[in-house]
Amino acid sequence: MGLRIVKRDHCPVWKKCCFYLGAVTLALVLGAAVLLGLGVDPLEYYTRMFTMGTIGNRVAYKVFINYLKDFVPLALTAVALSLAFKMRFWNIGGEGQFIMGAIAAAFVAFQAGPVLPEFVTLVLMCLAAMVVAGLYGLMVAALKVRFGTNETLLTLMLNYVALYLLIFLGETKADWNFFLDPDSVRPVFASFADLVSFPSISLGKFQLNICVILTFLIGALVFVYLRYTKHGYEIAVVGDSAGTAHYAGMKVSRVVLRTVFLSASLIGLAAAFKVGTAGILSTSITNDVGWTGIIVAWLAQLNTAVIFLVSTLISVLHYGSTVAAATFSQVDSSFANMLQGAILFLVLSADFLTRFRVMRVKKGEQHHG
Image 1 (cartoon, rainbow, N blue to C red):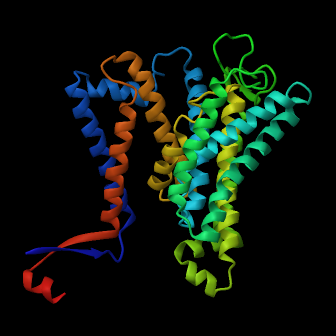
Image 2: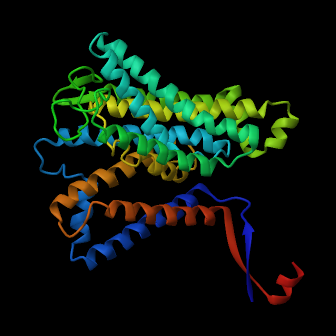
């Protein structure tokens, strides 16, 4: 007897949902086993984590305000990465592009904030972050188009170049370094929150930051761009087969350069939203959204609408685990990373089962096949 993997002709939607739901459930069961080993009641922990501590909380609206600060950069970064991934350009440089965008946005805030109107400064912050991050990604795309370099390796290495630039700015006390607080003896990033910040819409006690609305709007525009425009069609064709795209008369190099710049620039915009909301730089400004965004994009199978749903759930995991960790001292907030990894692995396994099935074959049949 042997095993053979056979491609499924069709997998009903209900069966796909069962596979994915089963994968997430199994991941939660594995997480529960870990919690039991640590002496924590899984039901109590999961309740605290998935509700983010809002039950019985008189200021629950503040929890959602802070939660959205995690959700916005993650969702927008994942949408941006999906653009490049659809073209099979493996942009692993989300972290570096986010950092470069954050530095550019903070630069504009410090320089333009004192002299220009707040609205103009915010627009310039977004534009600067998009241009700098876009060029940071475009550099890799140009090398790939011209010399056939490996974009995975280059974007990965450029993450650390950007990170060490940020660390350098955060640790170098000098007259030229306006990013640091001049009144602090230790090198500490200065706040520009009193100069410029993204406005919020008051809904009773709840303050809805305008970046949330802009993120959903951008997501809708990207969905339309990919689904209904010529550029979106070209991305799909190049992703399926660059040879076919060449044969159809498409300028593949131009498509690659344009799409990677758009992908990286949207990551820069996510950084501008994050920095403009926080009002300060930090060496942990990304909160690992460049890495987590890759997971979100793949869990959503590069579907723009599903990315927002997955981002919502992953943000709950991250923020909720931080809240739960404050109650359960035995569990570190990084438990969410472990649970996220288990969900990714099992969902990808479920995705495999929706596409293929494993058949038993007799030895003679296997040899004949």
